[in-house]
Image (tube, rainbow, N blue to C red; front, top):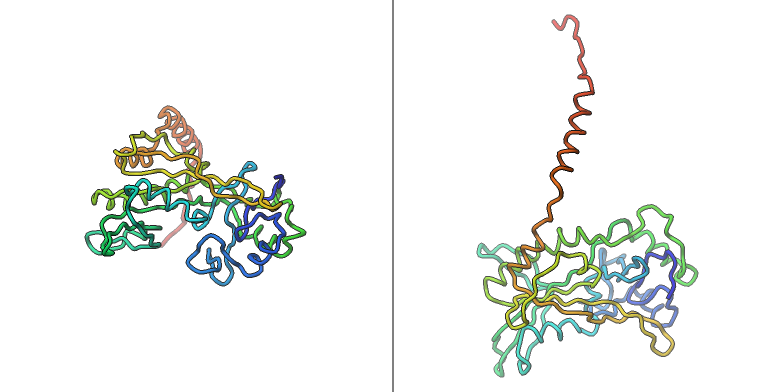
Length: 293
């Protein structure tokens, strides 16, 4: 599918080129088809939601809304196969608050899978953290421009506009993934409970190389997904598809994610020298105050 220089891949769950009744209904009613807590999209603003599920980067879709990963609840099935034995009965809960030893919140866990026995008693649990990608630039402007005329602007040209939206993988890793692993992941690891990290393949490919272990030894499952373009009854859509799964131990993953790769110190000294030369070549500003008293 060719969408030349159109920054948006999916809006309210449908391709920007989709003009079927279901797509137009989701746009007009601001609906989320991916199991949000309410029928409507609530991203950014409840009254004026930013209904962008994914953006296009180098011709491929990148998921920017965490709710997008809830399609058909595929992620819970994949995580459960890591958390529990095959014969365990389990249920899911969303946005569960996690406190530290002082009763202060370490944040909400996106999805918790709870295993229970025949009497309904909790016997085990595992945590799913969903890592959508931050956006660099402005995505609301093209979204609102598109929404004013979805039919006429399905192939709109946006490349020359200021702040063209792009995925910001570095900020996604440093500002969200690393703190999530450190705080929430640290608490869960101390309890000897497993975690699953759900993320887009393009995002995972930017992370440092992780040391893998066999599934039975792992603390974390990295569940990696892509959006596959399919056609059903002549209607094109993106379908969430698992592309890979990686199993790691907690501590090695935390070190890999939070430890920067150092650059060349010689280059840094060269920069310091250049700055020092500029400083020394600039004469100080001396002003004489005549008769101050």
